Length: 458
Image (cartoon, rainbow, N blue to C red):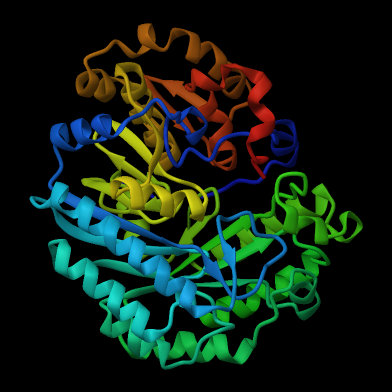
């Protein structure tokens, strides 16, 4: 078993390599999806897939309030009947898609958004019943949902338990009131503590907290206070995201004033102290934005070399195909990725017309499949055994990746990566820059003109 990941902070190296890069929740990334991908391509990939396990992702796009920082695909409304209409279309899509997976066992479900808990208890139970009616859902599995603590009662946890959820992820972002006001996300701190306490008492097996650093009015001092409150909550997992300020791309972000944002130096300081605080408190640094307690399955699988990564970030159950349902959702099945219509009106029109909402996708070629294995190995485990890759993929690593290894040399020179005995090992200093290291193996990224389409690494 591998030792847990540690981090050595090197300010000069982080500043040197702090340029834009993909998050590699897929390879090829979503930039390579196109509308020449057809329903027949998807059906062929399902037929040829070697998996018999399925992970379901449901996108619930509705939010009652607009968070100014948000770049997610969402619909801001307080009209509950809009959710009723959406569930009708989800039902139609489920009826269309489920028969294609009749031989699969569903062992993982995640509802994301938007705000899944925008749905009222009746809507949540109806949708969960639809899934149970049409898919083969295992009695035991990972069934998670994202929770907004501002718009629900504690009794919502009873509904979620009844619907079969055993994991929750709570969006906190920051406990500081000034920050909350600036991003239009005011919330009651005591309620969050009550929610966590009840979830644990009810037997929810995993709790996750989402935070964002780099929001308006945040300072290293105020964010350190938020981190201490988070440690009091003692979640099983944490996701600590970098706020990417892109007002030209996301209209809501124009409500955030540039002068209220932390400087790049302050953001680095927030990240540095966050890593030190969490690892000092016993959390394992999984990679990029993710932390988990040592006994959490993410930590265990990483230490065993079996961690997975998909559109939800670091995750478990590598053996699962992923089916996305709902507007903008993405599927990863066999040798393809497939994305639904991104906006709700075209989503409805497509479901009305053909029963599904396929918009675009990507069918992997042999080179894509090879590079996907390499990038996932590095981003999940920070090391790679060339001999194992040779055996797994039927290649000679040094010959196949000759150009890529030349690009990697700058990281070797800076002691961020070591190559010895045909093994690539990312140093404790290099692990914060794993996205940059993975770029060396990304043939699509070689077109540098596209850099601006990705968020900055830190």
